[in-house]
Length: 295
Image (cartoon, rainbow, N blue to C red; front, side):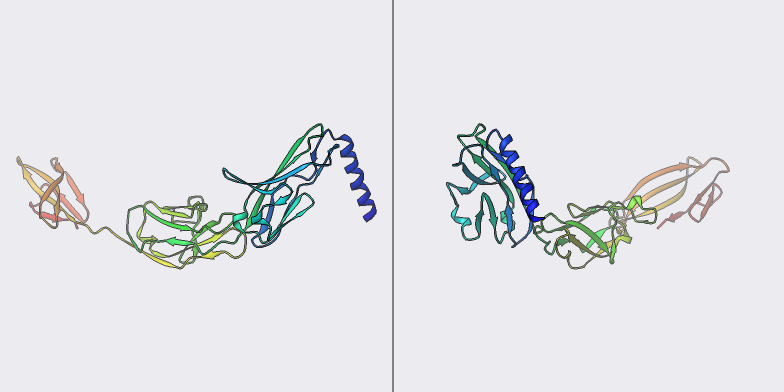
């Protein structure tokens, strides 16, 4: 069976050579994924038409920065202690996240009909997430907009984030779940942002966030408690039953608790025989004139 496989490979290679109109790379373009500190093989196999002295170069491309990995028949000095050549492919040992980049293999054969070819390979180094940093305010005022943040920068690929309140998962789209009553927040799993708008008294509780990218173990930040307080009222509402121009009238005012200043909010004259219901009060135009504090 092994002989048949070798024969078929040799036949295919000879067929490619026969059809070739110049230097041709026969290894397929593909991304290479490897766990950090393991070994990565960057493949680049090619065939020539007639030139046996082809020039091979490897370049590392990271953003706008381009540097040589293999040039003029040898590896660059920074790679010699942990890399080697396997034919025209590169074997890179003890890879780190700093090695993540696109690597381009370039072959030039001046005597061939087509003198140049290249292939690009993306190296992805898989790194588990670190413990995320969580920002949770210790307190907030009911009715305000509040943001909780969760972030870690070590994981590769980037982490997705899950928020928990009192050990229960906060859904990414709570409004779409008919069984979930608290829909005053949004969660962005990509950025790690949890936003309450508005926040409620019921949102008080213990919060933590989990980062997970499918590599290694998920990581959680420490639990933090957030207390939501109601706005302390600074005014009292005063309802006065008055007689203005011999017409019974209601006058609703706000009274500042600190200064005692009065601000008229609403004026309402009675019609003859009309009754007005204010909370537990039933007021008619025959009611003796008096003041009612509503808080």
